[in-house]
Length: 301
Image (cartoon, rainbow, N blue to C red; front, top):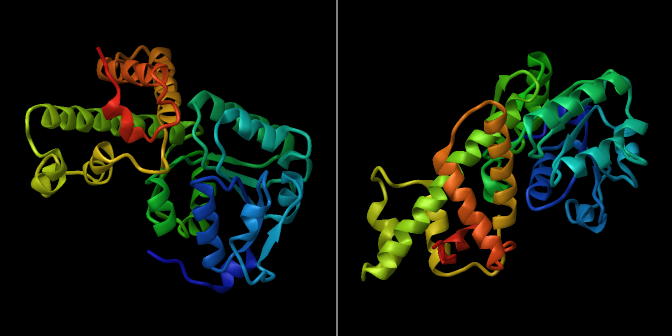
């Protein structure tokens, strides 16, 4: 999926804060789609890689406040809630430069209650609207423009923000009021992590019983057990990647959030509880910063 340069793109200035593994390809998609983009990252050299020609469409800001002062809408893609809080409300944060009524679209992952608190504070201090819009699809999806965005917040604001999000997302779905996007992301992580754990156990079973584990993805292709996760992660369980695309530490953080959210609502998730303990064991065994596929190498006795 690709986005095209249009007159409407040129008329809108998109602020983007956070050029990590996901944020960098997402911001690149916006630049390539023809938007005027104002970028901020703690290490500004990353931003300079997005437009080698140094066209007028790309501005690198010295602070989030400067980004907010230049932008019609601001996208965030940061590590967690503390990082978002600092970038938005800290010294030189967005709030200090934002125009009255500015929209923030936050692609970071956090708990629904944290997202609601940020939305309330942003509205109180700026009169603006906050959309919690976590994504799924990984770095490959960000680069290809095929991410799935799960959005929570005002319906009209989400509709208005959908056009620029189409630069990097195949689908933008409003899931409900503020916090609903984050709640949906937690449900997504339940499916993702329990599936990864199942693939890891299947791989271990194959390796210890004489089955050619490397042939499993091709053997099961098109069957009920087939999935993007099987095709992508199972080969990495056999041959660890040189660089992780998603770490065990990050997935444990997400399942901690799932556990807290489920407890808050009195929901029992026994499979998630077992997988979370497996991730805890992985951290204890020194795998915290390993690729998530390496859960298959963790002993779970």
